[in-house]
Amino acid sequence: MASAKADARLLSPAFVPTAIVIGAATLALSTWWLAADALRGKPSLAAGLGVVRSELWLADGWSELQTSPEAAEAAFTRALRLSPMDAGGWFGLAWATGRFDWLNPTASKALKMSYYTGFNRGDLIAPRLILLAQVDTTRDVELVDLLQRQVRLVLTRAPELKGAIGQAYRVATDANRRIIEAEFKDANQNIPE
Image (cartoon, rainbow, N blue to C red; front, side, top):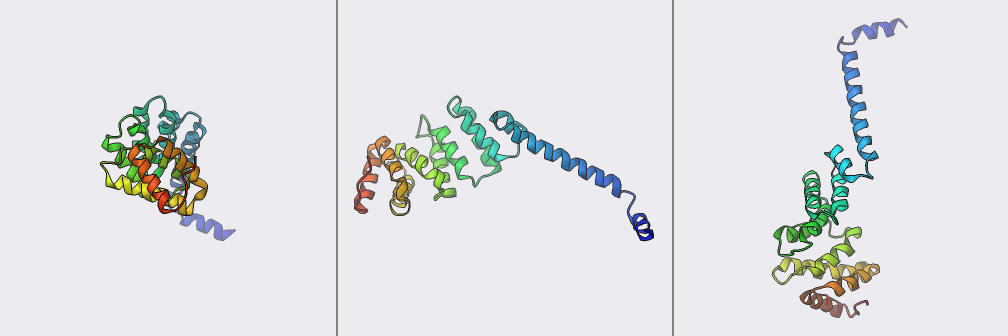
């Protein structure tokens, strides 16, 4: 008992106030974090509150995509500033900026970055392939290479996604259809209906 009193006297006089400040700051940060999570049903509010959380900006971008591509583009851009290696963010930006004009250099660059940052991301393979098939690849050798590699990947390593190639083929430009047909011919397989 006497040693406890002696140890208490060795503490700095600033210890207790500092511990209180650190505890209050931790409580405030935890409350802020949980409040943003509680607002996930309202993505714009959640992103605004959790301003440094890229996943909230991504959710906001996807929620805005159908009604306001410009707002979606801004949300995806904000998410990518916070997390530049997120392939899903790049895919969202490509989708938001390229919906009406694939001559837009932002859209093609964003689509490329989506592949470069997450080529094998299973959740993106099918939707990204469908989007890529709609892009005018005649002016961009890099996009042609990405289309060939993605089709080859599905044929060799992810046959369960062959249906996505069929969907991509149906919406593809003529040039991209020829690329897909060539990959299937090289693999001695038929394009799924």
